[in-house]
Image 1 (tube, rainbow, N blue to C red):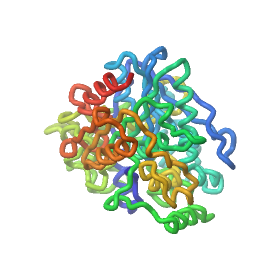
Image 2 (tube, rainbow, N blue to C red):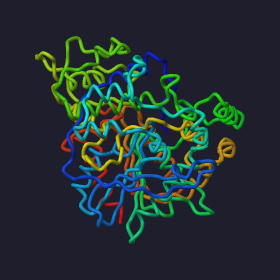
Image 3 (cartoon, rainbow, N blue to C red):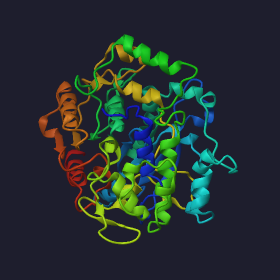
Image 4 (tube, rainbow, N blue to C red):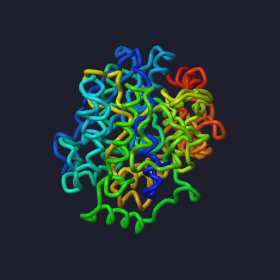
Length: 472
C-alpha cells in the first residue's frame, strides 16, 4: 500500500546521513538459520540470481510458520527483533523472513570482516563510501552498473510472488501450517500472493491466515490512484529506457547508496555503540540531522530517527525511542517511550547474531527493483484491472481469500491498512469474527511495530492472541 517516492538529494542525504555510524543492538540469544531456495526462473536472469534466501527464527521442529515479506529497500533480518520476541511467546511457531533475490547483488565482504573483528570501522567506511570522495582509496566497493543488471528490470511482482511461492512450499513441508504477512510494501506483496491466480487457484488456498503490518494491497483515490493502462505503459516504457536504472534511485546516480549508508552505519554502532559519532565530519552530512551538541553514535542515531526530532520526510524510518541525554560529552541517548535506540537500529544493521556464518545478511536492500514498486500500484486488492495486464501480473482472485486476517496501522498507515483489510475480507465474504484490526495512528511510527520493546509492543501483544486463537 505504501512505497518510497523519489526524493530530492537533500532529503535522501538526510536519510542516509542519519544512518551513518549509528547505534544498533547486540545479537539475540537465539541464532537464526539462513537457507537458500531455488527461485523462479526469471527470463533473462543469470542462474545465480534465480534464488531466494530465508532467515528462519524459532526451533526447526515447530509446526506453524509465519512467512514475512519485507518492504521497500528492506532485507531478511529486518524482522529480527520482532521475530525473536514472537517465537519466544508462541512456542509452536517459527518465523521465516524472506530475503529477496535482489539482496544477492550486494557486497558484504567488508561488513563481515568488521563483524568478525578483522578490520576497523574506518576501513569499512573507506571501502564502501570513502572512495567516492577520495579516489586514491583501494580496494573499494564496486557497485553494480545498469548494464550489468538490465535483467532486473523484469524483477516485478510476478517474480517476487513466484519466489515467495517457493518459500511457502518449503514451509509447508511436513504438514506445517503457514500464515503470510508483510510490512509496508511487503503488505502489498502479501495481498498479491494471496490473490494471485496460480492456474485457477488463488495463492490463499495454501495459506491459513494473513497479517498486514502498516501496508496492504488496496488502492485509494486519495493516496495512490489505480493507474490507467496508458499510465502503466508509460511506466514500463520509462523503466525500459536503456539509460534507466533497474532500481529505485534515491541518490542519483547511485541506486545502492541508501542501503550501503544504512548497513555500514548501523553495523559500526553495533560493535562500537559508545564511540563519538563521526557523522558530523562527513562532508555530505545535512545540518538538520546533527544534534545540537557532539554526540555518541547512539545519540546521533536517536536524534535522527526518533519521531520527535527526526524530519517529517523520514517517516519511513522513525520510531518512538526516547530523547538525547541531558548531559555528557559526547552526548548519549536516553531510551524511553516504546523502545531503545539500539533496538530500533538493529532492524537495519548487519546481523551480528550470525557472526562467522559468512551469509551477508542485513536489514536493508541495497538494490530495490523499480518494477516491484511499480507493479504494487496495480494490485487493487486482487481485483483485475487494465494496468495488471500491462505489467504482466495476475493478482485477480481477490474474491477467493477466505482467511483470518490481521492488520496494524501506525501514523503512516493512518487507518488505510485496516480499511484495505476489511475490504479484502468483504470481497471474499470472510466472517467478521475472523478479522482483527488494530490502530495506533497517534502513538506509533512506521518502524515501531518491529522495534518496540516486547513489554510495550501493541503489535506483538495483539498479533500473538490472533495467531493463537484464529490459526488452527
